[in-house]
Every structure is written in C-alpha cells, then in structure tokens.
Length: 209
Image 1 (cartoon, rainbow, N blue to C red):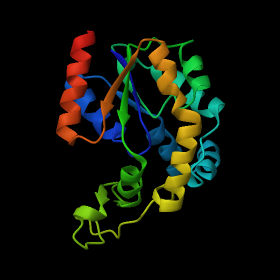
Image 2 (image 1 turned 180 degrees about the horizontal axis):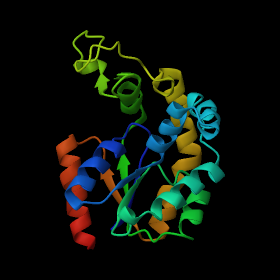
Image 3 (image 1 turned 60 degrees about the vertical axis):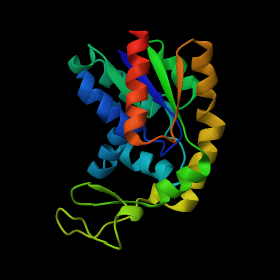
C-alpha cells in the first residue's frame, strides 16, 4: 500500500510510520530525515533548507518534490511505502498525483497545546541521534548511550514550534479537506496512547485492503 501520514508537527507521524513499516515490510519515506541528512552533510541544498527549517518555514516545493520523486522510483518502494512529511501543501499533493498513486491518507489529530509541550520538550543526542524528552529524563542532560550532552534542535524551540503550527494550519491543514474530497482520508485521534494509535491505524488499513 502507498500511504500518506498527515497531522501537525509532533503528532507522532514518524513514530507511527516506523511501526507500520516494520510490520508491513515497506520503507518509510521521510522528507524531514532526507533534509536533515543534507543539512548534516553541508550540501548546498542542505544549507538552503536549514534557513527555512530553523525559522519554522516550509522548504520550497521544487526542492522537496524532486527529492520525493527520485526516492519513490527506487526499487524498495515498488511494493508500497509510507510518506512522512510530504505532501505539506495542496500544490505538493497535486504534484504527487502525477507520479504516484496513493491508497490512503491517515490524519493524526492532536490539539495545539499538547503539541507545543511535546515538541519544545524534545532533546536529541548530536552524536548518535537518540531522541529524548524532558518529561522522561529525570533531570539528566546527557545521552544514556554515549554520554554526549543533549541539545534542543532549533526547530523544537517554543517560539519556532508556534510558528511551525501557524504555518501548518495555513498551508498544510487544507490537505485534510483535499484528501477527504478524494475519498482517501482516515482520521485518527492523536491523543490516544502510542499503542492504541498503532492498533487503530492497522484496523484502518485492514479495512481498506
């Protein structure tokens, strides 16, 4: 199946995509991961993307669409995939439809106040990439795996999170109506536990196969 995960930043799309991919044996195509890899590598595209991401803005369509088109042409995507973080605008969704057939768009619905707390509390190890949250760190400030001091990504700072949510509501939320009109939208409450959300997703996918 070719699946899109929708929802605001911090809704848990990446985590749920990993769980579904492992069970279904299909790849997770995360534009965020691809862009962050380009930033870490210091490529020209990565430097341009970082300027937008640090301000909570969307990376220009032509950059993202090109990345996704090339990725979906890879051999491991031919039996299905999950798109995580793309499309983010109706224009991107229309571009996607010219080179991919989507079976379902799953929307994870989470209130803004929950998202601000969830995102601004995230910390990450700059060495191994291990993710943490202040609610579960018990005052610790270093990575449990390698002892490296944890950092807060610029795009997880509270003021940037609020800007990201404003951008989401303006430019990305209309995708919900777009895919509802296409008959492809399935809405799931993101306030459930991680396990409950996963099971609801699998029930949804089984029902449409």
